[in-house]
Length: 321
Image 1 (cartoon, rainbow, N blue to C red):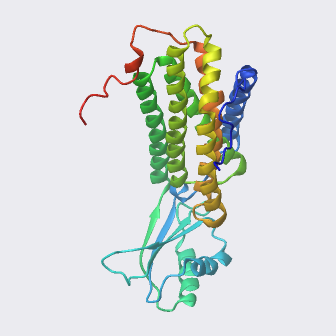
Image 2: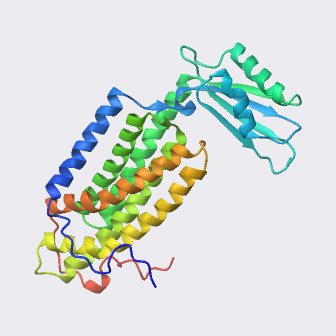
Image 3: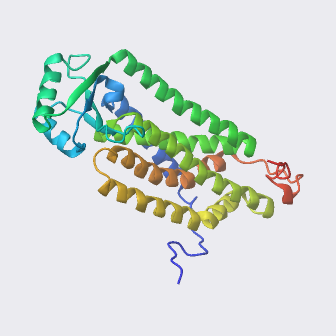
């Protein structure tokens, strides 16, 4: 018996209230931008600056014990990572990253001494080979690089879809991506979840996931536009969404099962990244159905039938890799 989250054949009218759903998406994007400028993002160490302390111990590293030892110091955002060196398996090295305290560019010498005392009480064999600080200038450069990475990714998507389909499809796909990224930033501003380089990686992953889902729907739309020449554009688009709905839902649900498991069992270190991915999958699925297709319906598509159907989109299929 096969599990079916969606019936094999559906005939739901996704465009019945398309102006309402599209308007709600635009409103959500506006609210996200307002939240970003009013509340801002809760930047982590990567963007705010801070201090990195490298430790070496004779005993095996217990990240949980290290975190518990530093918790009473109330130092804010602390990231503890065990560093593995394949050439020295018994090195027992950790990297502790502490955010800059209010009014300071980096952690003060007094605070570093308190950290060393707390860890030494836990493990007398521990040593501190290096202490490095990241100032606000470097953090500002990281912010610029992160924004540039997201913009370049969206620009590359625009160019790819333009070549793969027509420009109307390209506009729809990029609008969906901007929608997903904007709403993700908005929810992080609203909930004040730590925003660091891992979240930038999540944003880029969301862009790829949403694009993949959108391209699948667009491929079916192009096939049906050539197949049903007498049907209206709205009917063909709605039919295409229904035909790909089972695949879309199954992909999203299976991805969410894995992500929710990571969110519950993965611990605090990756929880922000996983939350961004969960939110991105939800809004990415929504935007593929209700944003990208709504843009396509509004702009219209040139239905050019001069190109043979059996080579549609496969003009480079016979080129050897």
